[in-house]
Length: 273
Image (cartoon, rainbow, N blue to C red; front, side):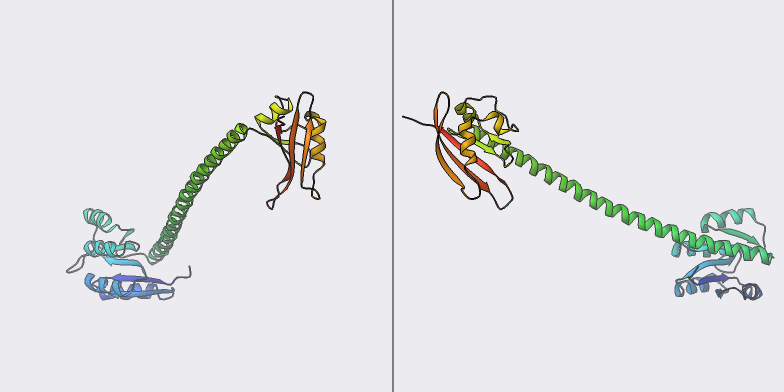
């Protein structure tokens, strides 16, 4: 416990206040004393760090219940204790209910018991403060998580819309590619077919040619020959391709983009005589 402890004692009897001062003389507490509830409230306003408030029950003017009720309204975090020499059950219940009293101690008190009660009250105060701090931190964390979650949902929604748009673009590109009057064939540097439109399959006479196939297994020798003739040194080649039942004109291009895409593209069309 690093925070200093301040105890406010209110009693209209000066000897009671002196007894309390003597009782806690050896403790590291700061004791504030007042003889009326009004004086006690004034001291409370001047000393915002007060943790414990001890009050007599029956005092002239503002009694202990009214005083502690006002203390509770102004400083609900304080731990409030009542001292009374009257065994009035109704008064005890009223004080506990209205002032939200932690403990009701009869006069004359037992010094050891009172010391223990104050020690436990101080422990309760700091435990409540710690709980309040943890609750605020938890609330702040929950709010931060909510912001993160909201942002994440927004990012997911934006990303989803982006993917849907890209899929639409790809679908349109695929449709356009298949609608071209010329054949388009794409092969990566490992010889894997990565693109082949409908016209290309028709012109080379292989309707079952699929993306992912090994070009050596599915392409005619004349097409493999023109594809083999291009590379970093010779990036474009035009040639007449002779197939079993037709003759095609082909243009092969070596692709090496700044984004890292590398491969070979072949555009073929029927030779018109």
